[in-house]
Image: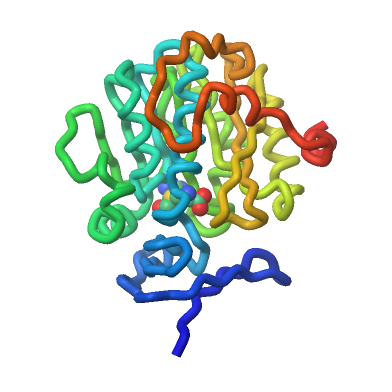
Length: 277
Ligand code: SAM
């Protein structure tokens, strides 16, 4: 008998992956957690029925959420990842040799433990005792409310705006992010699909640009996510990702991110430009 896992992407659209094996199924205080091995995507993490990351395409999301902001800042030393329980963003962050301390605040310790066991390729940075990596299990919203003038770059690697992640998509949260950044700091957040989350993208862009002088949205092709195109939004106090001298970016062995993409990912189709006007 064939087994399929379906994610309901909108009330009228599902994406299904044929499953080889269910490796883990459990529930934390925050969400239902599953790891399934699939034919097309390999092993993947599912939270509350929503596909989060897969071995097939995780490099795209994690390289793009980490390297675009980190190469925009000329000397990122102190970096914070909010969420990111699978560890993929942290794996990319610590490849930047300028980073002295990379903190991660993830609300759900069980996500971290499950990913360490079943997705070690992604959670590699959390598997060793690296003095540059500091993981805290806690709420990223509370952490932001307490932090002040601390970080060069903040990466909000959150799940969807429902459940524990809802407050990470609000104006008050962005106000705290602004306060937590140093005077030349910048942040990035995954901002969902430009096809299926248009009102969200519009609202976030309005909120972020009302606080940050430089607000830029960029896109990446990610087969696992609704519509296959995913958006990210940067809010920056000083540095403009489009003004970066790409010649000065050191080469890094990446599978998706490259110097041309650093700028070209900000070239938006007209329907997205119109949305963000
Ligand atoms: N790449 C993924 C995607 O966009 O589908 C997201 C990856 S990561 C698994 C998202 C993480 O954010 C989850 O592990 C979730 O527990 C965490 N999270 C949600 N709300 C949070 C909060 N308020 N503070 C810290 N972490 C949070």
